[in-house]
Image (cartoon, rainbow, N blue to C red; front, side):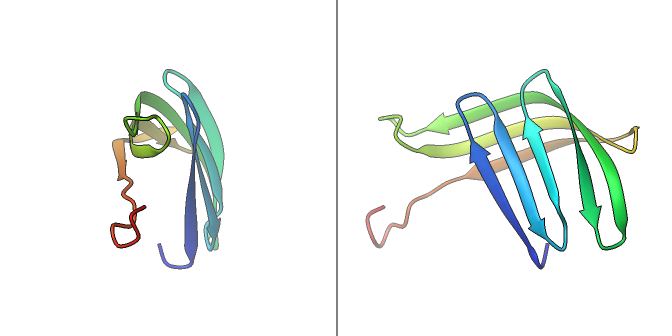
Length: 99
């Protein structure tokens, strides 16, 4: 999504997605909880509702860093079911710098 930055805030048992730019949104992913947000675009605003069905946060062996996130959720837009979705993020350090 050109002109949009996406930030994932990872906590012990939930994740927050924040989008800023030509699209604005803040969405929480908590297992077995419904969260609501507004998806603001230059063309209008939609009411978004998600039901997180699975959330897995993978950490390094020493528990110091998050190495992966896997989220499955049901999406509703303006009160109408839209789709079942999966979001998978693999986090790798910079191999050149040893991080």
